[in-house]
Image (cartoon, rainbow, N blue to C red):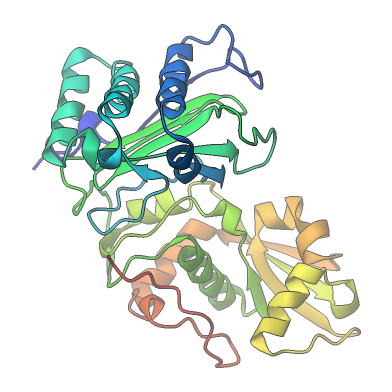
Length: 337
């Protein structure tokens, strides 16, 4: 089955427009009607439904992997809503798909129909972007998401407009490219992916501790055949491995808490090696890691991860990630269903 027949547009899409950046209502934006239709849908919900649909913080923008029937989706099931709300959900999705040529939009609708239609989607909106910024509280959101087993339609009007789409014909076997690396026995959620990256960081550097910020996790890792393209999508920032040296007395509380969770005592005068990402070493060093004594740059994290998965597989990631001391860390798995 060719890429076109497996998914709309042959793969995930993103589009945007800078008009109205950081402004309520996106004035002058060419896609402003898409915001209006989404807001009309959420305004149609009852107070209880709105509460169920609203989440405090949006997921990272590239978190658009298809989860299949066993997926866990933000928000409220469209199937459980009244007829008017279901129609408004359809109107919002239709306005977004109409961004593309009629033939391509038509095939996207075929994919949706094959997987239960609008009624198979969940709808969520978000009070705040994943990187912070304006918090709308109980007000109208400019970030919303429709998601089901084989579709993600993620409209982001803050801090500027970008819409991310992934619509497939088969959510159990989504489009993937590249070399086959391993069979993943169970899906990894965001915290599971973080722990996987931290194990990779430790193995690459030999550091006592690894830290990968969960806010950087670009999605989930599904169960089944994993290819290099899946890892490129999962670590889409092109971040590099960085090894830091931090004295115990200069270690920030969040990092110190990770040592404590392992049962390790931090000695004030000791120098510790901490493996992390280039982003964390730059943006989060002062608040999360501490005062850095030295820094060493390494290879791209996605290349390191691909090498590690090729050598070790993912079976261990579905049971326990073990620290360098041999202690069992928390499980990284999410059971299907």
